[in-house]
Image 1 (cartoon, helix red, strand yellow):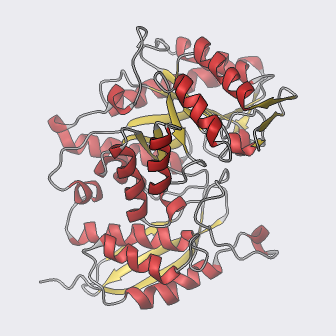
Image 2 (cartoon, rainbow, N blue to C red):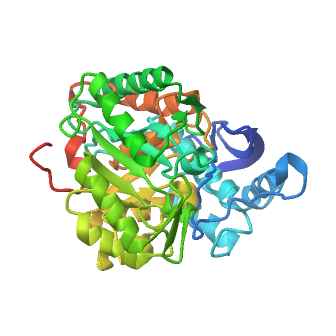
Image 3 (cartoon, helix red, strand yellow):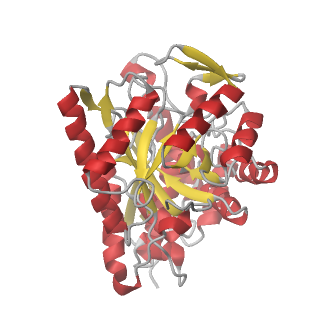
Length: 432
């Protein structure tokens, strides 16, 4: 029998989509098999996230990762050497114990998540299975509903608009591939509209258009026109999804809308977003209030959660205990799953399972600083997550993930199933 014990783990510095250093971990087994994975990094981050370990100082603007790479090459490799690759939970528990801190500040979440993903990749390779199938086992899985950025704003686009992501979802599509086809048409139409109006300034961190808008509502109106120009029906075939990322401009119940030069309290934010929900076919809103405004989250969910997916990102930071508390308090009905927020895949899966147990929508998500690594595409399928969010419909670090799910869908053949509307924890209206 082939020896699937870990021989060593190597950490190296590689570069992400923003040209910043990040950590790649490469696991080598005693049988010679090798597998690797790369840690992503966020721009809009919650205070409860696991720490992305950076060196500080002048080099690369303080963003170097030599300490995190050294942790992989030294402490982590030494601690896991000789362990069999077969038990992901046990290996991740060893990583957590080795770190020994609440926020992963000893090893760094970048070192830990790169290692955790590489361990899983090695286990799947040792089993001679695609990663998604290794995770799913004999369970039937469905292809996720993609959530795809058309316009970027907030921290991803120098705060040109207050809202961080203006996205679309295509729940009426009959397959994952058709959902991408519809998105491609909307993305193309949106670009044409911006070019015609002279408001196109480039692309934001996640590949969405970086426009000049006079208001947040102008972005919504332009997105509606793009859907129409693509020959699709807004609300029936295509819905809008927003990432407000309110923690970026809100604190202690006060929200500074720089684009519009006004300040709102929690009730004002809820009223403004409620007006958008009344006027546009919005199916999902992420972080509508700031992470330090749980009462605002509760009030927003009470008012709008029946017809709109209310996602906690900075609010829940891929933490199972926070997800269960939010379910009990009815302060959200969906959770974003970002493995590097937690530090290991086992912890990320626990948050996803807590969401499913609570009847939440669950969305596996990339970060704004990404790479060619496609692990999360497999997680979204193998964990049967329901939804996948990796950014826009441009830039190779994004397209690599969408294309990987296309390959998985093709490999399933006649057994392929698409989540569609069932991925959303909402009551469908007459228009949908």
